[in-house]
Length: 309
Image (cartoon, rainbow, N blue to C red; front, side, top):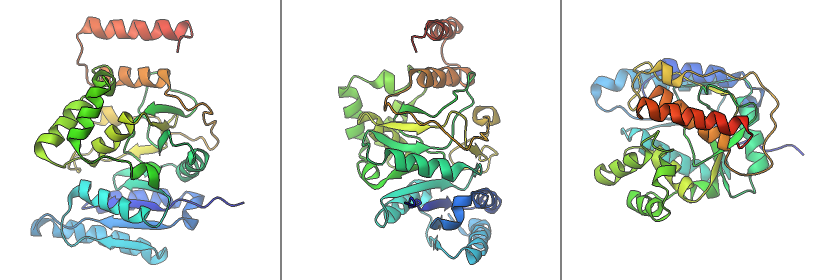
């Protein structure tokens, strides 16, 4: 029986060259020809930005002229958060699963195979929140796909019921994480500031859709599958994006050539993966005093050597 491929949804704005590169990379996936494709292009913020938005629309139109699918051109500027939130909800009103990409990503030629295989394998496992295509450049790469708690946003896929379980009220999410006594876990032992980001949403209003996605799945104890080696290259750290400043070192990662994966049968967070991610964040953004970082490294190596993780 042939597995039904998930529709692909791309969110673009004013970077025509980035969109063209993403579409080129996607077209090198053999599954792409049979996949339903949606492209959402946000409207310009003002008249000065109209030219680049129009050029981005033309890239989408020219591609969709060959692959006649769905193009949604926003008349008003919704911003990425609102555009993605409404677009994903619209597509999932017609489908039970989805693959989501933003225009500043480049994917490998096995990306769609991996995403669809993960969606098929874990569709009936409600503890699995999503399938993720990007993985950070860990010091000690993990060979096979692994689970981490929560969700992520750089080339991902999910199911309708998981998306519908998101809570879009930051105060509810803050209270839920506080009541669970898991602020430290949520912040990956202080290596990241997810909790502060959620507090910012409560104070300033809706800005980043991704923190609601991650916090909702984390607080529900759900997990996301990550590849051992990245199937996605992040090309947005060139100063062209709205929310990410240039930092090529942070996003640098090895790109996978794998086409066959051993997916975990046990649905549980990988302690090795979690420790590697914490170590990675501390290496890129050192926040602990030097002795604290050394202690964390020694602790990790001890546990690894004695097979405690």
